[in-house]
Image (cartoon, rainbow, N blue to C red; front, top):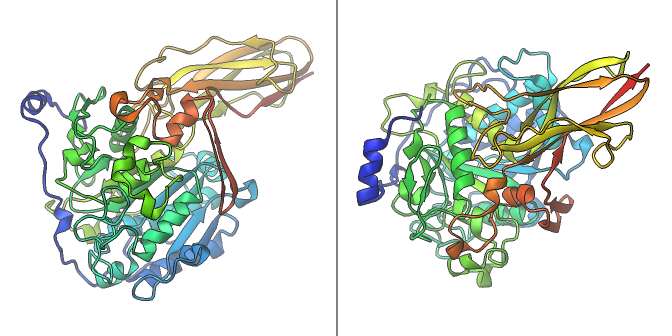
Length: 534
């Protein structure tokens, strides 16, 4: 997957990064007829919804089938932003176990802002359909642990905007009905060419701003076609800040403050999602301006850096005086360019299905990777029974939601709160401390498979009584210092990085679903295991 790049690297260091024109800027005509849509839940073959209304209906059918786990709602009505040009609503979807509350780490994924680019828009539905069926029916789930999928639904809020450009979807056009490019209207170097005359004039854009500022989203993405890239900020800002990937040794211009976290996470995601649409090698993953000439007003830079109260170095690029500040930003956002138009494949027939490789499978893998990354977590893979005889017993666990495990161990004793009160600890697994990656359940993630690191410790319970065991971990500490501090200041922009590296970080706002809080900490803990010894 990671091709040899020494010669290319040498040339690039001498002459700088190449830049290519974003093919998606052209008006590309696509077929207007699609295969007949399947009944939702029938995964024999993924296909494209004929129109926006049908796509919304598919989600609503899932909502009826899986109540309590999936909800569709009109976000434009919720936030009073009006109707989309052409008479449409902004339908959003929330996937989570509602019985466990709405104060979980959030992910937000947008159906393609360019209406003609329909792969991501449809594959978001097929991911949701697959996730519900794999988690809550008796269908077989090859390659995935059903308990882990349920854990994600219990511990994350997954939001999907069904389409960011419903008129463009229905009319097979890049633009919306006003003729605006909806990925050029954001308030970061915006608006850009083909966008409206001022930022946030479209109803999908206004609704997105309101949604983001009422939530504390950790990860997000908008989907595109025209290239085969996985890209992150910056565009046309901070051009002096350069970076070299410690993973692939690829050099980049326009490196953001969270460059190293973005780089390691994006390369791992690219490896994991696979090669169906083409190999995402090191030079296909990086800051957008390394690949694309100019996309002023793109959503990705706004979603990442437009909170100028927290990131004052960005104030020159954000017209917050006119549009208001954006405290909900600070999101790890990608532009995922799914498909290169120049590839000799018929994308209309190649979404695949649950088990057949295709764009559906690739996007599923990307979404799972990002949803997990939203927050560190520890998960038991083996524990003794709750009631046992005196003896020795083995505990096994994995650390996920992170790039590197700096420290992990067990704490245990007879106090029901072993997080704070414990008598014993096991060895500290610290072999990856200070590394860029390693030690997680995503170890060697490649083409949909992993060889995740599993930790184990054997405890002796010699006397009858009640014992309480917890696993703990410290992760991603190397990423707590931002890249390019002379330009960006001393704090990361990503809330998910600050949450895991800065114990003094605290963020709170009264949002749509109540109080939204993010509390930084250095240690993360598993569920507590209670063992009764007779």
